Every structure is written in structure tokens, then in C-alpha cells.
Image (cartoon, rainbow, N blue to C red; front, side):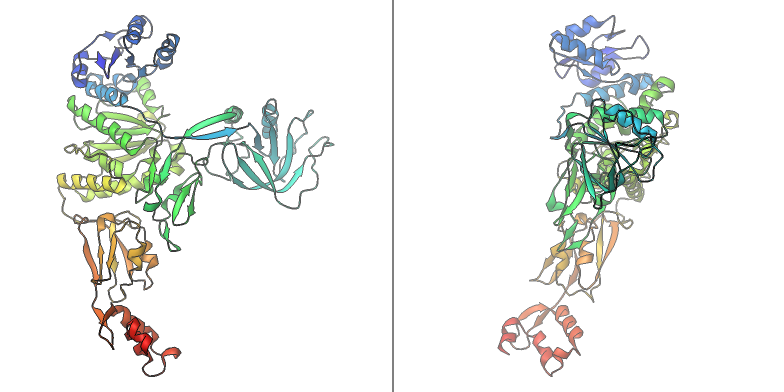
Length: 627
């Protein structure tokens, strides 16, 4: 069976799962081939022939290391290995899983493009933080072939000095940490070195009067206290009360030596960022959710420290404008994967697919296949680097592309970082409910495979054809437009909540002077001011509810109104004013409301107490200069 120019090798895994080669070939648009019984052992000859004939795609994930090693032995390209067993074949519904198998294979053969790498270089200098014997023993072990320092707090359990000390021992209070793997700077107050004459218990020299700094590559935190930084490469924490956790942490710290690559997870377009304008702060959503403190304000925008970034992705999920784009994978690549899964599944005869988004290291699906009933035939799993990066635009697009529902599988251990995806799911369900489609997206936070649930699967909608071109707001508009078209409540305004990224503004016309400060500050150009015709207009589809217009308005005349409006793409008038004519020459030179407001405010002021002084405000610039 040829797929993408290579031989697709199918295996029933010793008859443990059914495979229909004719139906699978029809779904993939190719000719059928044999189904092997034991491709990784007795039928290895077929694999070798496929390598010699132009390359292989192996429908097996478990034995991928074996197939890759065999290809390396003959200088052949490594085969693409696709798991259709744990995700489809080992299931109580395996007999109906052919559309899913075809979808999984079709998605796997899509071209892969890796984001630009970020290089991290660690010299293996390790700082151990702790307060008891476990930290001391960890430092002793690591010091065998690493440069190690141990920092204990001023109040710590009595520690016996090591017989042979191959590492530095400090006492002090770590108060601040900056950097990431390879360039940590730890600020310590009361730093004091251990006395070489320490006898039964460690004793320390007098503390330094000023704050000191320790420069290290890796930090192993066995203190059992809340870490000074949130999730970041090169900071390894472990519960000192768990021997297994401490052992894993020691090994992880030891292994962080040399040059490492990690993906450049996010890119930021400053022109779209709604953080601030003219010194007024509007949107801080990304800063509020970043678990590694890798984002910081700079000018009107937000910038990222790529070395500190942990690829959490919540910033991209919650960014209302699309200024922050997640790159692991790119929106375009992810949309192609999802559409390929859904389209192939439907074309192969599948109906009402449930899209299951999970992390790459999730073991729940394999556990369910081995010890339970496996995934249902209509549940299509897709592995992501981080489910926290999934935003409302992608969830709504999945529904528009034909998914009956979307389920996000997250580890309960990472619950504290799940805020962005939880907020996105809540927003999407309120939108779909307002469109008459009901709640369509769920978050499953469980470590128990048997606790996975799919609920009542509603029929999916006709599939849209749009892609990820145009950015976040364009995808949101396209997805909502499609859902509105096919939903039973398509023409109604959906009320939303404060903080949601859709809506309009309410303008107090009596207070507004048409100074246009709001239009100048608006980063998305949702507000447009026309001084010639003295109008202020609003295009709701562009509004992100960032609040910059509200904080910029000198008259405090603006209030945010979160909502989803079917007419959001059409500009509407917020205020129009009459021009004020100069008392001397009659020239129109300002909005009437602006002049009247100035006169009102300055009436009674000492500078304008003299009769006729207020009339200066009612004169144009030329006439005022002649008086």
C-alpha cells in the first residue's frame, strides 16, 4: 500500500486488532496491501523491502525505536511510525475504527516544520537549595563530576560537615532569582561561608553585610518551600519527603550539561499588542498568566525572554488581538492537522467526531487501551506540545470544521497553570450556547483513564473550508460566522462577561467632547475618529475589549460592553457633533461639545474672571491671536 510515495505497512499486532485493508486503502486513496501479523519480528523482511523500495511508513508506535534502528543500520531514512493500535485498534469499538485509522495516518504524513530553535548552554554549575541532610547528600553526589554549591537558610536542621568537602557550602536567604538554564543569578542576603573548622555541626563565618549574587547554570530546589520563580528551564524542584522525586531531580540536574535546543514557542507582533498607549495601561492578560515570568512590558508592547519561556502557551491563548502567536506548532500547521483528521474521518464514513486534544507525554490513551475499553471509534486524538496554548479561536474553528465536540485532556498536576484554557472553554461554551448549539467543549482534568467521559455527542455541523490565514481575529470571525449561519439562533446578540474579547463601547454623549484620544489609542482600529465630519464610529468585530479607550478618555465617558453582535463587521456611529463657529470670523474650528465643556469648566476661574475673557475660548486660533 503506497501513501505519500512510501510503503505503508500495516500490522494486526499478532491478531490483537482488526484492520480492513480495502476500506483503509479506499479512505487514503490508494491500493490495498497486506496486513502483517508480526511486523516487528517474523515479518521484518517486509519492512526491509519497503526501506529498499523508497521508504516506509509503519502503522505502529510501540516498536518505533526498533524500526528506526534497523533503518539506521542500512543508512536509510528513518521510517514514520504512526500509532493506530493504542489510539484506535485496541478498543471495544475497533470494528468501527477504520475511519479513525485513516484519519490518524493522513494527519501523520503531513509535512512537519520545526520552529526556530533557542539555544541554551549549561556548564553544569549546580546550586542545591535545601535545609536538611537530603540536600547535603544530593550536593555530595553531584559534586563527584559537577561544580556544586549548597545554600541552606539561616534556620535549618543541624547538618554534619562532610568528611571531604568537594563543594561550597553557604548559609543565607535567597530573595530573588533571574535568568534561566545556563545563566541563573541568585541574590542572597546574609551570605556566609561554612567554616573549615566545623566539627560536629556546620558552623558559618560572619554574614556579608550586603546582598551577594551566585552565578550558576542549574538550580536543584529541595527546600520544600514555594519556588522563587515559576515554571522555567533549569529550575528543578522536588518534594524532599519523596525519595523517588529527589532521585529523579538529582539525575535531571546532573544531565543538564552542554548545549540544548528548545523551540521558540512564541512570537510577538508589537503593532497588534494592546498593552499600553501614551503611558496608559490597557491589557495585561498575558503578563497575568505567564508561569515563567518570561514576559515583560517594554514601551507600548510586551516582549518575551526566549530563554526563560517555558512554552506554556497560555499567553497566546488569552491574547485578544493575536499579537502573541504560538509556534509549536504554528496556527497554520495545527489547522491543517485538525482539518485533515476531520476531513479524512468523514470521507471514510465516520460521523460526529469528537476531537480529543492532549499533551504529547500523556499516557492516558495507552493506559485506557491496555487496561480498559480503549477510545471510542469516534474520538480522534491529537497530541499537542501544550494544551494550555489552545485558544477560543481554535476551539470554535474545530467546531466549524465539523467536530461535533472538542475535549481537552489536561493533567490535574498542572491545574494551577490551566487558567487560560479553562477561560477559553468557558467563553466558547457561552458563545455556542448563545448561538443555540449548546456547550460543545469540555476540559477533562484527571489521571484516571477510566474517568474519561464523552457525554452526549451532538451532531456536528457542515464543515467550513476556511484555514488559519489572517490571524486570530480573522479565524474567530470566520468560525463564529459559520456557526451562526448553521445554528438555530444565528441573528441574536449574545451577552458576554467582563474580560471577554468581544464587544463594543458605550459613550456618554453628554460628556464626550470628541477629542479623539480614544481613537488614537485604539490598537485594533476598532474606533475611528473623523474630525472633518466630527464623528466617532465603532467596528465591533475589531474590538478586543482591551480597555485602552476607557483609561485614555479624559472625560471618563466610555464604558466597555462585552457582547457578540451579528452586525459586528459593520461600522456604527457612536457620536456626531455640530461644529462650533468662531465668534469673530465664523469659521468652524472645533466640536461644539468640546468648546461648551471648556467654557463650563473655566467659568469662575480666576484667570477668566475679567468680563469677555471666556470669549477667547470661543475664538479660532487666528482670531484669538489678534485680540
